[in-house]
Image 1 (tube, rainbow over the protein chains, first blue to last red):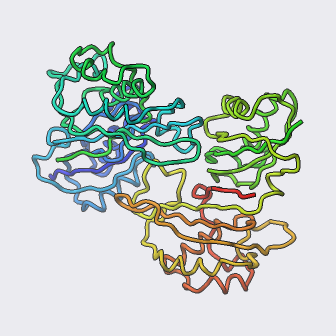
Image 2: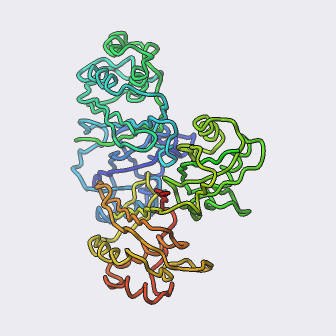
Image 3: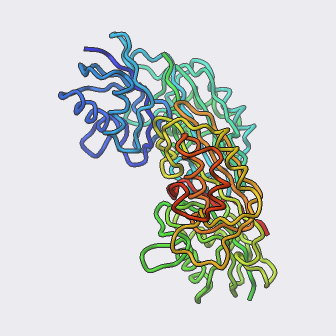
Length: 249
Length: 249
């Protein structure tokens, strides 16, 4: 028996999220089914991040233990042949037996993408939030600077979560003018840290956009971090704009 | 009554093509329906290029004549409110009455995109052709150079076409390494000219890819142009990789 690490990409549009559940088709579910078919027995997959329904991944990492004699590259090809085109295995690697995609992760990076312009290009309609009004990106960047460091992010946690601490360390939070385009621009908000609370990136993005629209004071982030009240912060940005882009070990 | 020019983007995946037809939903059809609703009477739309089923547009241009008193920007917003998200009006402009999107066009640019790598990223699966084998891009570029100029492109014309001449002038034909990415690269083939035959860009791309794979001589293009035989040239590349990107007047 060996332990494998999988590098994954997926379009989350049609899935109920990463985690296997009764309500519909999950990313974990389709990959576990493909692995189990190749293995000829049940295989359990552990993902680094449990992305929500509609959230995408450019660099999700998962781990599993299996007996299959297939070498890593052949396994990757066999998996892709058994997966829907919305889920791709970019690479498979055999790793140390104590590797666990979730518990071994040291840092993660998420990217939130939004289209700032009158009409959103059809090609990114499932991959970006459409914000037509003008946004003050420099103001949003100054506000985002206050997120960097170890803070209690309770104000940015989705309701119904049960975690033992809401303190997380954010190592970088930056807005990137990703692509000038006719009729608008694609903006990305990239956030790296040692861990993220449920809906944290989307709640932070929703709040920063309210600041960028002038609907909330530019210096509101320190107040929200101190208040620790979800109802004080901004709306949760839609799932379709969020990508898990990188996991570090 | 005034004449308007529309700048359009669309995701062609779910359409039977630009042209209205009985077999399914067309891009022309949904825009004519939205225009007619706003006008309160039938409006006919003329497109610069009649893209095939599954072909996309980043910069299609169309023209129409109508009586609606709405100003250009309001008309663009009203159209977008009545169109599916797969079709967007980027801009509307009132133009001279003798403007006709098709007959006034001086030049068009198409771009054909392909993913060259083991697994195609899920986000571009409807917007690029997947070619997993190694491609010699420099060889494909040298072959493409032979396309530039006024030539008889009969060898690259889809069967069943009836045009009075198959001579077209290509002003540029270049391969662009658009984006380095993990596990592969996105390659684009951009072709500009005064006009294009049916399936021409896709037949040219399919032929150049066969050259890049080493399955066809590097200097085959001049021979094919002289032969004027569709059966001598390469396969027609799939529709999903093709974009009409620009029309010049």
